[in-house]
Length: 201
Image (cartoon, rainbow, N blue to C red; front, side):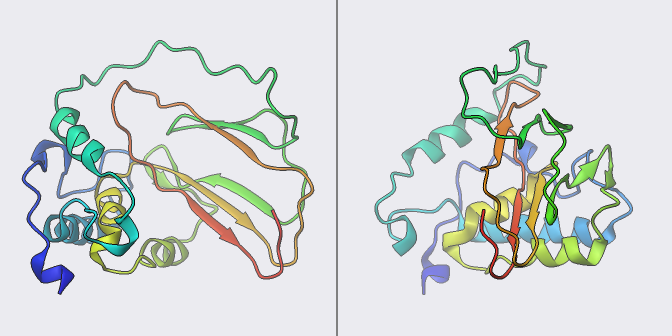
C-alpha cells in the first residue's frame, strides 16, 4: 500500500541523476550500469521518504527537500579546505582519511582479519573486490519506500569504502575514518561494512 500511495518526487534534479554510471565507475561493468538504472527507477517511484513511513516517523525530512532544491545550483569546484588535523583526536593505530578518491592511512593497519579498501581505484573496480561479491553487497538492500535514499545513493554514488572484519576477529582499538569531500557540493559515497560472525569492532 505504501508503494501505491507514495508521491512522485517533484524536486528530482534530472541533471544530478544520470541513467549511466558516473565517470569514476568502471564502464565495462554492464551489470553496474543496469543496477544504477534500476536504482534510479526505484527512487523515482518511491520519492523522498516522509514521516508517513514507520522508519521515518520521528525524522524531519524537510531538510531533504531543501537539499534537492539547492543541489543542482552548487558549483563543481575543488575545495581549498585543508584536511582536518588529527591532533587532539582519540588515539588509534587505525586512522585513515578518505576524500572520495584516495584512502590514506596514518599508519598501516597491522591487525589480521581487517580489510579496508576503496571500492574503486581510478575508474576500475578495486582488484581486492571480485565483481560478484561487490554485486552481492549492492543488491542486498530491500526494495521498499523506506529505503528510497539507498536507491538514490545506488544511482549516483562514485566511490566508497569496504570495511571488512573477518569472523572471530576482535579489535581492541577503534577504527577512525575521516571523510573529506574533494569538491564543494553534495557527494554520494557507498560504504560497505561487513562484520563476520563472532567478530567485535
